[in-house]
Each structure stands twice: as C-alpha cells, then as structure tokens.
Amino acid sequence: MIPAILKTRFNTNEILVSLMLVYVAQTILAKASTGFLKNPEGMGFPGSRNFSSYPAAANPELIAWGLHWAASPHWSRRWRPMCC
Picture 1 (cartoon, one colour):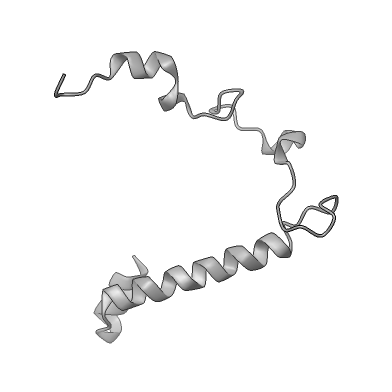
Picture 2 (tube, rainbow, N blue to C red):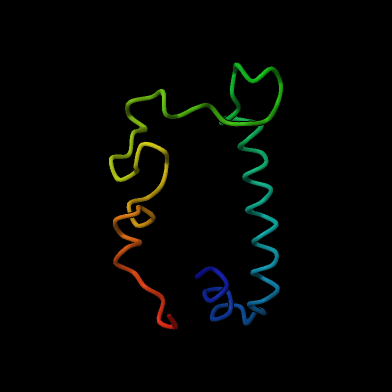
C-alpha cells in the first residue's frame, strides 16, 4: 500500500520503495527486540518476553500448542489436493 501511494504522489519506483521498506521494517524489529520487547530475565540476549504468562495476551483462536485453527487436523481432513 505504501509503495502504491508513493507511486501515485511522487512517481517513485514501487520495487525500489518496497526493497527500502523491507530494510526499514527489519531495523524497526531489530530495535524492538533489543529495546522495549527485551526480556528482563534474558541475561542480555535479545528476545522478547514469554507472553503466554500474561492473561491479556491470550488468544482463544489458537490451539494449546500454538497452531491456528486452520492448521488443525480436523480442518486438514476436509481439504484435499486437487491432483490426487
């Protein structure tokens, strides 16, 4: 969406803008993992906290082992590949 907006406003190249935005997103995520998401009990290693210990971070759509309901065995039995 951002490359399209920049294309219409400033006539920029979408491919170059997309590649530069990947670098920006990577930098933001790297700073977040060593900044405000850093685990205080992590002994200096970058990484986030274990959010499963916070009740507000619970997501009822996720199965207990962390898979989305679409990846459950019940759903995969219904889906069959077209070729077989």
